[in-house]
Image: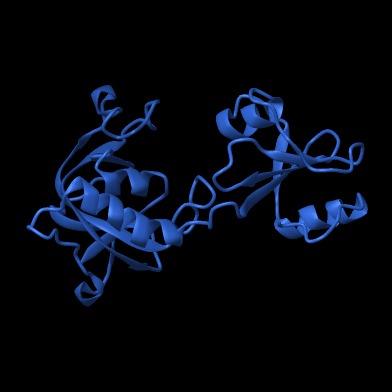
Length: 221
């Protein structure tokens, strides 16, 4: 089957039916079934990466217009001369690993296993069960450390923990982990992007800084 990689969270929005238009910089004559795969680099840390997640029908391709924003789960217009790919007939499949490529690529049909409801069409309850049993386990484990940052000004270490809204931070001054307050610069930087104070760093880089601060180990618990 012809496949295409979509970055998460947008691949997830397609699999839930919220997103029925995909924006692309290129046109295609392909019409019909299309396997949607999550790309290897999700926009939101912890979401599924590198897996086939669902199948849709590509019905039409038109120039992207402002009226397409809501169905595309977008707030702003894309680059000029972009295209709206119109999807329908969503079908959930058992997720499986896929090594994505640019543009279209082919995936063996034998790997695709459809979910079928007890009475044919899936009920809302059955869909919820599918996401709980098959999709969520492919994401970061709840409460796991997903990503580290450092404060650009004083090297305070900030981290995001899966399933937790407040961020955690550790500075040389306090020598202990603390939770951010709602509306803090760290939260505005991480969640909204309206404050430029955090720089993403690797776990190993964060560990070196924490070690210099005398932070108790293990660091990722």
